[in-house]
Image (cartoon, rainbow, N blue to C red; front, side, top):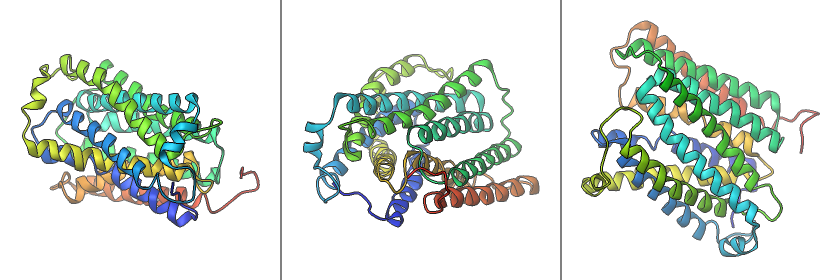
Length: 337
């Protein structure tokens, strides 16, 4: 398999990961009237296809480890189980976060759900693999959290959405945030146990976990949506326009799958580690905000207070991203190798 041997290569993979994680939702915006539950089928199919493509190409050539099929043959069952569980946990959490946004509103779901996931994920990942400068890493995470809160405040002040946080909405935010924070430590464990899978193999097993879980979870959500919307028959998926299927598979699932496997690959190297990989990847929240501002004009006509919040949001995002990016290259005396 191929893996980066120098930090600039690993950083470029993480930057690509962040851009992918922050851009896949544009597919759903282009589909406009499509329900998320229907889009999500193609999204999961697309992630699985991309993981297999990367496994058969980058995961099968190079001098950094065994080929894909050799990797599957030698790895322990424990490594498989952790990777599969990570995909299943992520899938449930991602669906519930979407429900949380619908029920509680973006201004509540983002700082609570995504913020909680970053805190849980980085702490647990650093505990599993204590690597890189903790001051720069956790300081950067704090700056990213401030940026997320500023983003949520800007949406609240600009939007006419006056929804009050309900018990259901808050519970969905907490559960989804915890799930999104727990999935990556499961991946980190899969990459750390004896006779572990390589990152490309982990990507395939992870996506398989998503796919199997989705057969149950998304079907249940379609039958009884947590958002209060009408239920959807499974036949609705097959009545979708071909263009929607194409967007869901490619711009949605394949883009997210590419970013996820790249993140796993960078995480598996001694250059980075899972805590930094996860933290940089979660900068995707601000990437999606940039799409909203620049392309979708979500803050068009906003007042001066909102514009100031957006500027501050980007400032804290850049500072946080820079701090996390420097954490692998500026060491401290107590930092683990």
